[in-house]
Structures are given as C-alpha cells and as structure tokens.
Length: 144
Image (tube, rainbow, N blue to C red; front, side, top):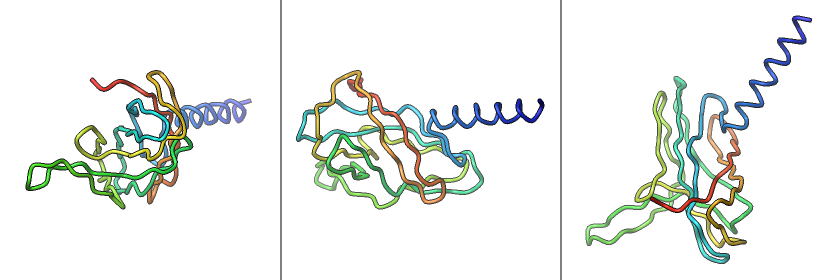
C-alpha cells in the first residue's frame, strides 16, 4: 500500500511541475503575449527562474500560432533609434532569474497564422541547453 501511495504522490508532483512550466530546476513564470492580427507579428514576455547551481541557456522557441519564432533584444542605438537584435542564446545564470519584458529581451512571433485576442491562450515550447524543452501556456493580454 505504501508503494502505491508513494507512486501516486510522485505522479501528482510530476503533473503539477509539468503544468507550471518547470523542468530540471528551470521555472517559467508569468508568460503573456501582446494581441496581434493574422499575418502580423506579436511578442511573448515571461520570467525564467533558475534556482539550480548550474547555469543554462535559452536557445530557441517554437509555437504553432506563428510562422516562426525568434529571440530578440530591443535596445537603443547611438542615434536614439530603437532596434532589435536576434539572440542565439540567452544566458540563464545559476541561482538567478532573467526577465523577458517590453523594451528588452522577448520572443518574437513572426507571421501570425491567426488573430491573437485578449484572453486567448496558446502553447509555446522553450528550448534550453541543459533543461531541454519546456512547454508553457501563454495568455494574450493588453500591455499595462
């Protein structure tokens, strides 16, 4: 009986951590996207928490609602113009968090296959060097 109880507890923990976007210590929190129209672009923002003793790296993302996904960094150039640079890797230091937020790092959804309206949700799979793939649910919200 004790083995059955232990197995059930472990299964529940596994299901809970999967639903929250947690894998190998990496936790993905507060994921949201901007509304967008079919054929246009949108952005995904989130926070990645790495409580482990080893760093990791976000190296990609995939999403069925867009023709492509890219990790970008928005920044101001010397002339005062906002630009975006594609990022091949975002370092997630050990025992630290990285925020993908407006005006900085973000996941660009290129060529939306459908409209994204406030309240919609959709899955995004994040690819990490160490933790592997983590699929999260993203909610479309109006920016504050």
